[in-house]
Image (cartoon, rainbow, N blue to C red):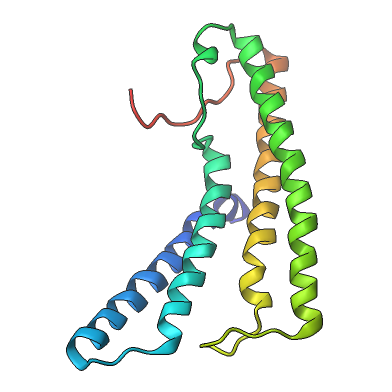
Length: 168
């Protein structure tokens, strides 16, 4: 069961937030066009669902090595150098992610301290600001998995996982 959670946690979370976004947006469009009335909370639900979608999607992209990258150099180097370049890139991203968790957590703590709430939903902003540290924490977890996989592949002499390709 833990293997399924590890494999699919981002997909399930993305499905929840995407469904929330689409359903809320559809309801708000119908309300606005058919009844000439819209809610104050609808825009906020869509906005915050989209923010969670972006950060959880970024972590999912790290897992699948699906981030946009310039990989021309990878076509001209051997498998060992390719593995080292992927490891270097993951270490740089890991450093940035750790810094981002630290600084984004400070924003969450400040919001918690002063009790800020959203305008329409009247819910604590902490829940929405947590999207950034949660997204980066998931990225850190996936980067550590990627680093372990790449180091194992490098030691075993196997070619590293390069992820799926968008275009051939």
